[in-house]
Amino acid sequence: MKLINKKNKSYSQIFQLFTEEEWTKSSKNYNKNIASLFSGKKNEVFVNANEESIIYFIGLGKSDIQNFEIQQTAVKFSQTRKEKLQAAPTLVLADFLNEKQFEEFIKGLLMGTYSYPFDKSHPFWNTKFEIHFENLSQKKLDTIGTKAEALTAGQTACQEWLNKPANLKNPVILSSYLKALAKKYDLKYTAFNRKKCEESGLNAYLSVNQGSAYDAAFTILEYKTSVKNAKTIGLVGKCVVFDTGGVSLKNPDNMHYMKSDMGGATAVIGALIYAAEMKLPVNIIAILPITDNAISEKAFLPSDVITAYNGKTIEVLNTDAEGRMILADSLSYLAKNYKTELLIDLATLTGSSVRMFGDTCGALFSNNEELKNLLIRTGDKTNQRLWNLPLWDIWKDDIQSDVADLKNISMKPFGDCIIAAKFLEQFIENHPKWAHLDIAGVAFGNTGYAKEKAATGFGVQLLADLIENYH
Ligand code: BES
Ligand code: MG
Ligand code: ZN
Image 1 (cartoon, rainbow, N blue to C red):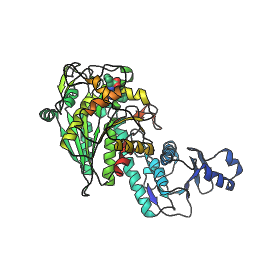
Image 2: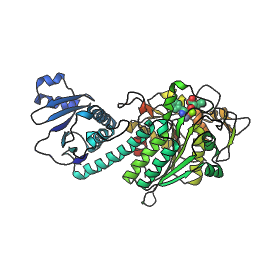
Image 3: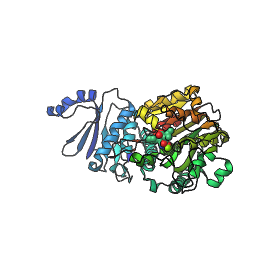
Image 4: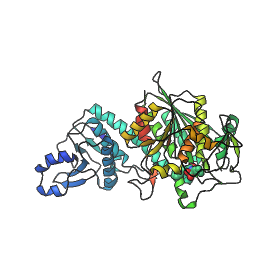
Protein backbone atom coordinates (compact mmCIF):
# COMPACT_ATOMS: atom_id res chain seq x y z
CA MET A 1 0.00 0.00 0.00
CA LYS A 2 1.17 3.50 -0.80
CA LEU A 3 -0.11 6.68 0.83
CA ILE A 4 -0.40 9.58 -1.57
CA ASN A 5 -1.43 13.18 -1.13
CA LYS A 6 -3.52 13.78 -4.21
CA LYS A 7 -6.95 13.58 -5.63
CA ASN A 8 -7.69 11.96 -8.98
CA LYS A 9 -10.66 12.93 -11.12
CA SER A 10 -12.40 9.70 -10.38
CA TYR A 11 -12.04 6.63 -8.21
CA SER A 12 -13.38 3.12 -8.47
CA GLN A 13 -13.17 2.74 -4.69
CA ILE A 14 -13.76 5.24 -1.89
CA PHE A 15 -13.59 4.87 1.87
CA GLN A 16 -15.72 7.54 3.44
CA LEU A 17 -15.41 7.75 7.20
CA PHE A 18 -18.04 9.12 9.54
CA THR A 19 -18.45 9.61 13.23
CA GLU A 20 -22.09 9.61 14.30
CA GLU A 21 -21.96 13.40 14.56
CA GLU A 22 -20.38 13.82 11.14
CA TRP A 23 -23.02 11.56 9.68
CA THR A 24 -25.82 13.57 11.25
CA LYS A 25 -24.41 16.64 9.53
CA SER A 26 -23.99 14.95 6.13
CA SER A 27 -26.87 12.52 5.91
CA LYS A 28 -29.23 15.12 4.49
CA ASN A 29 -27.15 15.08 1.31
CA TYR A 30 -28.12 11.47 0.67
CA ASN A 31 -31.23 9.51 -0.10
CA LYS A 32 -33.42 9.69 2.97
CA ASN A 33 -33.87 5.93 3.18
CA ILE A 34 -30.20 5.60 3.98
CA ALA A 35 -30.86 6.80 7.52
CA SER A 36 -32.24 3.40 8.43
CA LEU A 37 -29.22 1.65 6.92
CA PHE A 38 -26.30 3.63 8.28
CA SER A 39 -25.79 5.80 11.33
CA GLY A 40 -22.03 6.12 11.78
CA LYS A 41 -21.83 3.74 14.73
CA LYS A 42 -18.52 2.04 15.37
CA ASN A 43 -17.81 -0.80 12.90
CA GLU A 44 -20.86 -0.08 10.79
CA VAL A 45 -20.22 -0.41 7.05
CA PHE A 46 -22.57 0.59 4.30
CA VAL A 47 -21.73 -0.03 0.68
CA ASN A 48 -22.99 2.61 -1.69
CA ALA A 49 -22.43 2.44 -5.43
CA ASN A 50 -22.68 4.95 -8.22
CA GLU A 51 -21.68 4.70 -11.86
CA GLU A 52 -18.00 5.23 -11.16
CA SER A 53 -17.33 4.00 -7.68
CA ILE A 54 -18.01 1.62 -4.88
CA ILE A 55 -18.17 3.77 -1.77
CA TYR A 56 -17.70 2.24 1.63
CA PHE A 57 -19.25 4.31 4.40
CA ILE A 58 -17.35 3.35 7.52
CA GLY A 59 -18.75 4.22 10.93
CA LEU A 60 -16.27 5.23 13.61
CA GLY A 61 -18.66 5.89 16.48
CA LYS A 62 -18.95 8.91 18.75
CA SER A 63 -16.78 11.92 18.03
CA ASP A 64 -14.84 11.43 21.28
CA ILE A 65 -13.57 8.01 20.17
CA GLN A 66 -10.09 7.09 21.30
CA ASN A 67 -7.38 6.40 18.80
CA PHE A 68 -7.25 2.68 19.48
CA GLU A 69 -10.94 2.47 18.60
CA ILE A 70 -10.27 3.86 15.15
CA GLN A 71 -7.61 1.20 14.76
CA GLN A 72 -10.10 -1.47 15.88
CA THR A 73 -12.63 -0.33 13.29
CA ALA A 74 -10.02 -0.44 10.54
CA VAL A 75 -8.82 -3.89 11.64
CA LYS A 76 -12.33 -5.22 11.48
CA PHE A 77 -13.03 -3.60 8.12
CA SER A 78 -9.87 -5.03 6.66
CA GLN A 79 -10.48 -8.50 8.12
CA THR A 80 -14.03 -8.79 6.86
CA ARG A 81 -13.65 -7.11 3.46
CA LYS A 82 -10.50 -8.93 2.36
CA GLU A 83 -11.84 -10.61 -0.75
CA LYS A 84 -14.09 -7.80 -1.86
CA LEU A 85 -11.66 -4.93 -2.05
CA GLN A 86 -9.90 -3.92 -5.24
CA ALA A 87 -6.19 -3.30 -5.38
CA ALA A 88 -6.68 0.13 -6.93
CA PRO A 89 -6.20 3.79 -6.07
CA THR A 90 -8.64 4.47 -3.26
CA LEU A 91 -9.78 7.82 -1.98
CA VAL A 92 -10.20 8.28 1.74
CA LEU A 93 -12.67 10.99 2.67
CA ALA A 94 -12.49 12.14 6.27
CA ASP A 95 -11.94 15.87 6.71
CA PHE A 96 -12.47 15.71 10.44
CA LEU A 97 -9.67 13.21 11.14
CA ASN A 98 -6.45 14.49 12.66
CA GLU A 99 -3.02 13.12 11.83
CA LYS A 100 -2.87 10.69 14.74
CA GLN A 101 -6.35 9.38 14.00
CA PHE A 102 -5.53 8.82 10.35
CA GLU A 103 -2.37 6.98 11.44
CA GLU A 104 -4.45 4.63 13.58
CA PHE A 105 -6.79 4.00 10.66
CA ILE A 106 -3.91 3.04 8.37
CA LYS A 107 -2.28 0.87 11.05
CA GLY A 108 -5.56 -0.95 11.51
CA LEU A 109 -6.05 -1.50 7.78
CA LEU A 110 -2.63 -3.12 7.54
CA MET A 111 -2.73 -5.12 10.75
CA GLY A 112 -6.20 -6.40 9.92
CA THR A 113 -4.75 -8.25 6.95
CA TYR A 114 -3.18 -10.83 9.24
CA SER A 115 -4.47 -14.36 9.38
CA TYR A 116 -2.57 -17.59 9.87
CA PRO A 117 -0.57 -18.47 7.85
CA PHE A 118 0.26 -14.95 6.75
CA ASP A 119 0.64 -14.68 2.98
CA LYS A 120 0.12 -11.04 2.08
CA SER A 121 -2.44 -11.90 -0.60
CA HIS A 122 -4.68 -9.19 0.85
CA PRO A 123 -5.27 -6.33 -1.62
CA PHE A 124 -3.68 -3.87 0.82
CA TRP A 125 -0.32 -5.51 0.19
CA ASN A 126 -0.63 -5.02 -3.53
CA THR A 127 1.45 -2.09 -4.81
CA LYS A 128 -1.52 -1.03 -6.93
CA PHE A 129 -3.38 -0.28 -3.73
CA GLU A 130 -2.91 3.42 -3.20
CA ILE A 131 -4.60 5.38 -0.47
CA HIS A 132 -5.19 8.95 -1.55
CA PHE A 133 -5.75 11.42 1.24
CA GLU A 134 -5.66 15.15 0.68
CA ASN A 135 -5.76 16.37 4.25
CA LEU A 136 -2.16 15.62 5.19
CA SER A 137 1.11 16.56 3.50
CA GLN A 138 3.05 13.90 1.59
CA LYS A 139 5.75 14.10 4.25
CA LYS A 140 3.29 13.27 6.99
CA LEU A 141 1.78 10.50 4.93
CA ASP A 142 5.23 9.01 4.39
CA THR A 143 5.87 8.96 8.13
CA ILE A 144 2.52 7.35 8.77
CA GLY A 145 3.16 4.73 6.10
CA THR A 146 6.57 3.87 7.54
CA LYS A 147 5.19 3.58 11.06
CA ALA A 148 2.23 1.48 10.03
CA GLU A 149 4.41 -0.92 8.06
CA ALA A 150 6.96 -1.21 10.86
CA LEU A 151 4.27 -1.95 13.39
CA THR A 152 2.57 -4.44 11.11
CA ALA A 153 5.88 -6.21 10.50
CA GLY A 154 6.36 -6.57 14.26
CA GLN A 155 2.79 -7.51 15.03
CA THR A 156 2.45 -10.11 12.29
CA ALA A 157 5.78 -11.75 13.18
CA CYS A 158 4.55 -11.94 16.76
CA GLN A 159 1.25 -13.50 15.77
CA GLU A 160 2.72 -15.83 13.18
CA TRP A 161 5.21 -17.42 15.59
CA LEU A 162 2.70 -17.76 18.38
CA ASN A 163 0.18 -19.38 16.05
CA LYS A 164 2.61 -21.90 14.62
CA PRO A 165 2.08 -25.48 15.74
CA ALA A 166 4.70 -26.82 18.13
CA ASN A 167 6.41 -29.04 15.54
CA LEU A 168 6.97 -26.08 13.22
CA LYS A 169 8.63 -23.92 15.84
CA ASN A 170 10.93 -26.19 17.76
CA PRO A 171 13.98 -24.45 19.23
CA VAL A 172 16.09 -25.21 16.14
CA ILE A 173 13.57 -23.70 13.72
CA LEU A 174 12.92 -20.69 15.94
CA SER A 175 16.63 -20.08 16.39
CA SER A 176 17.30 -20.09 12.68
CA TYR A 177 14.53 -17.54 12.22
CA LEU A 178 16.02 -15.34 14.93
CA LYS A 179 19.47 -15.64 13.36
CA ALA A 180 18.05 -14.52 10.01
CA LEU A 181 16.14 -11.70 11.72
CA ALA A 182 19.31 -10.53 13.44
CA LYS A 183 21.10 -10.52 10.11
CA LYS A 184 18.33 -8.58 8.40
CA TYR A 185 18.18 -5.88 11.07
CA ASP A 186 21.81 -5.85 12.08
CA LEU A 187 21.11 -7.08 15.60
CA LYS A 188 23.78 -8.78 17.65
CA TYR A 189 22.80 -12.42 18.07
CA THR A 190 24.20 -14.65 20.79
CA ALA A 191 22.87 -18.06 21.78
CA PHE A 192 24.25 -20.28 24.54
CA ASN A 193 23.95 -24.02 23.98
CA ARG A 194 23.75 -26.49 26.86
CA LYS A 195 27.51 -26.67 27.32
CA LYS A 196 27.89 -22.90 27.40
CA CYS A 197 24.94 -22.57 29.81
CA GLU A 198 26.56 -25.14 32.12
CA GLU A 199 29.81 -23.21 32.07
CA SER A 200 27.96 -19.96 32.79
CA GLY A 201 25.87 -21.42 35.60
CA LEU A 202 22.46 -20.88 33.98
CA ASN A 203 21.16 -23.91 35.83
CA ALA A 204 17.60 -22.77 36.49
CA TYR A 205 17.13 -22.35 32.73
CA LEU A 206 18.92 -25.64 32.11
CA SER A 207 16.75 -27.52 34.62
CA VAL A 208 13.80 -26.98 32.29
CA ASN A 209 15.81 -27.64 29.16
CA GLN A 210 17.45 -30.86 30.39
CA GLY A 211 14.40 -32.92 29.47
CA SER A 212 14.29 -31.53 25.95
CA ALA A 213 15.22 -33.34 22.77
CA TYR A 214 16.60 -29.98 21.59
CA ASP A 215 19.76 -28.28 22.65
CA ALA A 216 19.59 -25.22 24.88
CA ALA A 217 19.33 -21.83 23.17
CA PHE A 218 19.59 -19.10 25.75
CA THR A 219 19.30 -16.28 23.24
CA ILE A 220 20.40 -12.67 23.49
CA LEU A 221 19.43 -10.14 20.81
CA GLU A 222 20.86 -6.64 20.92
CA TYR A 223 19.62 -3.64 19.00
CA LYS A 224 21.95 -0.66 19.04
CA THR A 225 21.24 2.85 17.88
CA SER A 226 23.96 5.06 16.45
CA VAL A 227 22.59 7.95 18.53
CA LYS A 228 25.00 8.82 21.35
CA ASN A 229 24.00 8.64 25.02
CA ALA A 230 20.84 6.76 24.21
CA LYS A 231 19.05 4.86 26.95
CA THR A 232 19.13 1.10 27.17
CA ILE A 233 16.10 -1.06 27.78
CA GLY A 234 16.34 -4.65 28.99
CA LEU A 235 13.58 -7.00 27.86
CA VAL A 236 12.99 -10.63 28.76
CA GLY A 237 10.35 -12.78 27.06
CA LYS A 238 9.35 -16.21 28.32
CA CYS A 239 9.99 -18.53 25.40
CA VAL A 240 8.62 -21.98 26.16
CA VAL A 241 7.75 -23.21 22.68
CA PHE A 242 5.55 -25.89 24.22
CA ASP A 243 4.67 -26.48 27.85
CA THR A 244 3.59 -30.04 28.65
CA GLY A 245 4.07 -29.29 32.34
CA GLY A 246 6.96 -31.74 32.40
CA VAL A 247 6.72 -34.57 34.94
CA SER A 248 4.04 -32.51 36.75
CA LEU A 249 2.10 -33.17 33.57
CA LYS A 250 -0.76 -30.92 32.48
CA ASN A 251 -4.29 -32.11 31.88
CA PRO A 252 -4.54 -32.94 28.14
CA ASP A 253 -7.89 -31.15 27.56
CA ASN A 254 -6.37 -27.74 26.90
CA MET A 255 -2.78 -28.72 26.45
CA HIS A 256 -2.66 -27.73 22.78
CA TYR A 257 -2.97 -24.11 23.86
CA MET A 258 0.47 -24.43 25.37
CA LYS A 259 2.04 -23.70 22.00
CA SER A 260 1.27 -20.16 23.11
CA ASP A 261 3.67 -20.32 26.03
CA MET A 262 6.12 -18.17 24.12
CA GLY A 263 3.77 -15.16 24.10
CA GLY A 264 6.24 -13.07 26.08
CA ALA A 265 8.99 -13.80 23.59
CA THR A 266 6.85 -13.05 20.54
CA ALA A 267 5.87 -9.68 22.03
CA VAL A 268 9.55 -8.89 22.49
CA ILE A 269 10.36 -10.03 18.95
CA GLY A 270 7.60 -7.79 17.58
CA ALA A 271 8.88 -4.80 19.53
CA LEU A 272 12.45 -5.43 18.37
CA ILE A 273 11.29 -5.50 14.76
CA TYR A 274 9.46 -2.22 15.26
CA ALA A 275 12.46 -0.57 16.90
CA ALA A 276 14.81 -1.78 14.16
CA GLU A 277 12.49 -0.85 11.29
CA MET A 278 11.99 2.60 12.79
CA LYS A 279 15.65 2.97 13.79
CA LEU A 280 14.51 4.18 17.19
CA PRO A 281 17.12 6.09 19.21
CA VAL A 282 17.38 3.55 22.04
CA ASN A 283 19.36 0.41 22.77
CA ILE A 284 17.59 -2.83 23.52
CA ILE A 285 18.99 -5.95 25.14
CA ALA A 286 16.49 -8.78 24.76
CA ILE A 287 16.85 -12.19 26.35
CA LEU A 288 14.75 -15.08 25.08
CA PRO A 289 15.34 -18.28 27.03
CA ILE A 290 14.20 -20.76 24.39
CA THR A 291 13.17 -24.28 25.35
CA ASP A 292 10.23 -26.61 25.53
CA ASN A 293 9.06 -28.08 28.83
CA ALA A 294 9.07 -31.75 27.92
CA ILE A 295 8.72 -35.08 29.63
CA SER A 296 11.55 -37.58 29.23
CA GLU A 297 13.78 -39.70 31.41
CA LYS A 298 16.11 -36.74 31.58
CA ALA A 299 13.46 -34.24 32.68
CA PHE A 300 13.85 -32.45 36.00
CA LEU A 301 11.87 -33.83 38.90
CA PRO A 302 9.78 -32.41 41.69
CA SER A 303 12.12 -32.18 44.73
CA ASP A 304 15.20 -31.30 42.64
CA VAL A 305 17.31 -28.50 44.11
CA ILE A 306 18.94 -26.22 41.56
CA THR A 307 21.51 -23.46 41.92
CA ALA A 308 20.42 -20.54 39.78
CA TYR A 309 22.73 -18.16 37.91
CA ASN A 310 22.77 -15.68 40.81
CA GLY A 311 23.73 -18.40 43.30
CA LYS A 312 20.34 -18.78 44.95
CA THR A 313 19.12 -22.35 45.34
CA ILE A 314 15.62 -23.35 44.25
CA GLU A 315 13.62 -26.36 45.33
CA VAL A 316 11.47 -27.47 42.40
CA LEU A 317 8.12 -28.61 43.75
CA ASN A 318 6.26 -28.46 40.49
CA THR A 319 7.90 -28.79 37.08
CA ASP A 320 4.93 -26.99 35.51
CA ALA A 321 6.09 -23.80 37.22
CA GLU A 322 8.90 -23.78 34.65
CA GLY A 323 8.44 -20.21 33.42
CA ARG A 324 9.72 -18.68 36.62
CA MET A 325 12.79 -20.96 36.47
CA ILE A 326 13.89 -19.81 33.04
CA LEU A 327 12.96 -16.18 33.74
CA ALA A 328 14.93 -16.22 36.99
CA ASP A 329 18.18 -16.88 35.14
CA SER A 330 17.27 -14.53 32.29
CA LEU A 331 16.60 -11.64 34.66
CA SER A 332 19.73 -12.09 36.72
CA TYR A 333 21.86 -12.66 33.64
CA LEU A 334 20.59 -9.41 32.14
CA ALA A 335 20.90 -7.46 35.39
CA LYS A 336 24.42 -8.68 36.11
CA ASN A 337 25.89 -8.34 32.63
CA TYR A 338 24.24 -5.23 31.20
CA LYS A 339 23.45 -1.80 32.48
CA THR A 340 19.87 -0.93 31.57
CA GLU A 341 17.53 1.89 32.58
CA LEU A 342 14.54 -0.43 32.51
CA LEU A 343 14.16 -4.15 33.04
CA ILE A 344 10.85 -5.52 31.77
CA ASP A 345 9.84 -9.14 31.47
CA LEU A 346 6.76 -10.46 29.71
CA ALA A 347 5.50 -13.98 30.25
CA THR A 348 2.50 -16.24 29.84
CA LEU A 349 3.30 -17.19 33.39
CA THR A 350 0.30 -18.31 35.41
CA GLY A 351 -3.19 -19.74 35.14
CA SER A 352 -3.82 -17.65 38.24
CA SER A 353 -3.60 -14.40 36.25
CA VAL A 354 -6.05 -15.86 33.72
CA ARG A 355 -8.53 -16.67 36.49
CA MET A 356 -8.08 -13.19 37.88
CA PHE A 357 -8.40 -11.04 34.75
CA GLY A 358 -9.48 -13.34 31.92
CA ASP A 359 -8.66 -11.65 28.64
CA THR A 360 -9.31 -8.14 29.95
CA CYS A 361 -5.79 -7.15 30.91
CA GLY A 362 -2.38 -8.39 31.86
CA ALA A 363 -1.22 -8.48 35.47
CA LEU A 364 1.49 -5.94 36.19
CA PHE A 365 4.05 -6.06 38.99
CA SER A 366 6.76 -3.49 39.51
CA ASN A 367 9.18 -2.18 42.09
CA ASN A 368 9.07 1.31 40.59
CA GLU A 369 6.19 3.76 40.76
CA GLU A 370 7.19 5.72 37.67
CA LEU A 371 7.57 2.65 35.46
CA LYS A 372 4.32 1.23 36.80
CA ASN A 373 2.42 4.39 35.88
CA LEU A 374 4.09 4.61 32.49
CA LEU A 375 3.09 1.04 31.68
CA ILE A 376 -0.49 1.52 32.82
CA ARG A 377 -0.82 4.71 30.77
CA THR A 378 0.70 3.07 27.71
CA GLY A 379 -1.59 0.08 28.16
CA ASP A 380 -4.68 2.30 28.29
CA LYS A 381 -3.55 4.19 25.23
CA THR A 382 -2.84 1.11 23.11
CA ASN A 383 -5.73 -0.91 24.54
CA GLN A 384 -3.26 -3.52 25.74
CA ARG A 385 -4.21 -2.95 29.30
CA LEU A 386 -2.40 -3.75 32.51
CA TRP A 387 -3.54 -3.74 36.08
CA ASN A 388 -1.13 -3.43 38.93
CA LEU A 389 -0.98 -6.04 41.69
CA PRO A 390 0.98 -5.84 44.94
CA LEU A 391 4.36 -7.35 45.71
CA TRP A 392 4.32 -7.12 49.50
CA ASP A 393 6.93 -9.06 51.39
CA ILE A 394 4.22 -11.13 53.10
CA TRP A 395 4.36 -13.42 50.09
CA LYS A 396 8.05 -14.05 50.44
CA ASP A 397 7.28 -16.29 53.41
CA ASP A 398 5.28 -18.53 51.11
CA ILE A 399 8.29 -19.39 48.98
CA GLN A 400 10.69 -20.23 51.80
CA SER A 401 12.03 -23.77 51.51
CA ASP A 402 13.50 -26.17 54.06
CA VAL A 403 16.16 -27.42 51.70
CA ALA A 404 16.92 -24.37 49.52
CA ASP A 405 16.77 -20.57 49.49
CA LEU A 406 13.43 -20.66 47.68
CA LYS A 407 10.82 -23.05 46.40
CA ASN A 408 9.22 -22.57 43.00
CA ILE A 409 5.58 -22.77 44.15
CA SER A 410 3.84 -21.83 47.39
CA MET A 411 1.65 -24.92 47.94
CA LYS A 412 -1.25 -22.58 48.74
CA PRO A 413 -4.17 -22.70 46.31
CA PHE A 414 -4.37 -18.97 45.66
CA GLY A 415 -2.51 -15.92 44.41
CA ASP A 416 0.02 -17.79 42.29
CA CYS A 417 0.54 -14.89 39.89
CA ILE A 418 1.72 -12.83 42.86
CA ILE A 419 3.84 -15.70 44.18
CA ALA A 420 5.45 -16.06 40.77
CA ALA A 421 6.18 -12.32 40.62
CA LYS A 422 7.61 -12.40 44.15
CA PHE A 423 9.79 -15.31 43.09
CA LEU A 424 11.09 -13.38 40.06
CA GLU A 425 11.87 -10.38 42.25
CA GLN A 426 14.54 -12.50 43.97
CA PHE A 427 16.46 -12.56 40.69
CA ILE A 428 16.51 -8.94 39.55
CA GLU A 429 19.71 -8.19 41.45
CA ASN A 430 18.26 -5.00 42.95
CA HIS A 431 17.49 -3.45 39.58
CA PRO A 432 15.67 -0.22 40.53
CA LYS A 433 13.23 -0.17 37.59
CA TRP A 434 11.82 -3.59 36.96
CA ALA A 435 8.36 -4.63 35.79
CA HIS A 436 6.88 -8.06 35.26
CA LEU A 437 3.90 -8.49 32.92
CA ASP A 438 1.97 -11.72 33.31
CA ILE A 439 0.17 -11.94 29.97
CA ALA A 440 -1.15 -15.52 30.18
CA GLY A 441 -4.77 -14.42 29.69
CA VAL A 442 -4.26 -11.90 26.92
CA ALA A 443 -1.60 -13.23 24.55
CA PHE A 444 -3.75 -15.94 23.05
CA GLY A 445 -7.54 -15.70 22.78
CA ASN A 446 -10.46 -14.63 20.67
CA THR A 447 -9.48 -12.69 17.60
CA GLY A 448 -11.33 -11.50 14.54
CA TYR A 449 -9.30 -13.67 12.16
CA ALA A 450 -9.56 -17.21 13.54
CA LYS A 451 -12.33 -19.57 14.67
CA GLU A 452 -10.36 -20.88 17.61
CA LYS A 453 -8.18 -19.03 20.07
CA ALA A 454 -5.22 -17.41 18.33
CA ALA A 455 -2.45 -14.89 18.85
CA THR A 456 -3.71 -11.42 19.75
CA GLY A 457 -0.39 -9.64 19.34
CA PHE A 458 -0.62 -8.42 22.92
CA GLY A 459 2.49 -6.59 24.01
CA VAL A 460 3.79 -5.44 20.64
CA GLN A 461 2.00 -2.08 20.49
CA LEU A 462 2.45 -1.63 24.22
CA LEU A 463 6.22 -2.09 24.04
CA ALA A 464 6.52 -0.25 20.72
CA ASP A 465 4.79 2.81 22.15
CA LEU A 466 6.77 2.65 25.37
CA ILE A 467 10.10 2.33 23.59
CA GLU A 468 9.30 4.97 21.00
CA ASN A 469 8.51 7.51 23.69
CA TYR A 470 11.31 6.59 26.07
CA HIS A 471 14.30 8.84 25.74
N1 BES B 1 2.42 -21.67 30.89
C1 BES B 1 1.74 -21.88 32.11
C2 BES B 1 0.78 -20.75 32.46
C3 BES B 1 -0.40 -20.55 31.55
C4 BES B 1 -1.64 -21.04 31.90
C5 BES B 1 -0.30 -19.82 30.39
C6 BES B 1 -2.73 -20.83 31.08
C7 BES B 1 -1.38 -19.59 29.57
C8 BES B 1 -2.61 -20.09 29.91
C9 BES B 1 2.74 -22.01 33.25
O1 BES B 1 3.96 -22.55 32.92
C10 BES B 1 2.13 -22.95 34.26
O2 BES B 1 1.98 -24.09 33.92
N2 BES B 1 1.81 -22.44 35.43
C11 BES B 1 1.20 -23.23 36.45
C12 BES B 1 1.89 -22.93 37.74
C13 BES B 1 1.45 -23.82 38.87
C14 BES B 1 1.99 -25.21 38.67
C15 BES B 1 1.95 -23.27 40.19
C16 BES B 1 -0.28 -22.84 36.51
O3 BES B 1 -0.57 -21.65 36.44
O4 BES B 1 -1.11 -23.73 36.59
MG1 MG C 1 4.00 -24.65 33.08
ZN1 ZN D 1 4.55 -22.36 30.99
